[in-house]
View (spheres, rainbow, N blue to C red):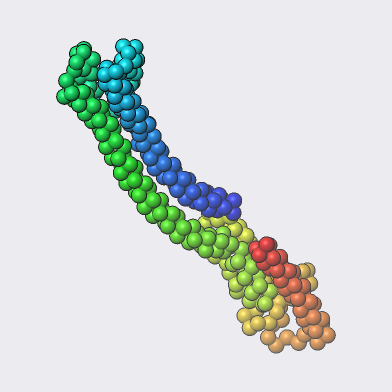
Length: 292
């Protein structure tokens, strides 16, 4: 497959896209891990803590209503406790929380079943409510530590990937333009040397390269121009045109006409100057296009 300029640009932009995609993908993955590991679980734990606080308040209301309040207040306080207890039983998130909630329900049933419940049973129910809250608060703390560890690992991983990405991008910035414009620079330099009269200049012809035909055409042109000089440096002249190889030239010992020889030399000089100016203009145009 020929390495065209379009293909090289596509390759370079694809490399940058992969770097950006890698950083974005890793960042999104760790953010997803943070969100998944903390949001839902912490929300349930906070709810359990709120239910435990509501049960503690309702238990205190039951005790006060039993001492001095009417029976309706006792019933209202007991109903409030049971609502919070049912909510807690439907929001089990931690190991051992289900057993603790069932034990709390049994203890509260014993407490309300006795008209004059002993103080020890009241303290038992309150202690179980406190353990429900403590269990969920400890889970919140552990989840916070786990989230912090994930965050630290995320920062380290993203920092490492960002450093590697920056180094790769900087290397790409300095190397890719040279990789992209090297054939144009070689062609420009070759044209300038030919314009200066160095007809032995040749360009490397790389297989599967977009500029391979151009380099081959340049080498053919330089080879033909080089053929316009004899081995001893004497120009070969042909009246049919500057790019045709002369089939005959003066042999040693011949006596050329001086005027005819001078005219031929002037004609050759004019043709070479025209070719040199044309090559120079072409080189300048390529250099200008490359700079732009």
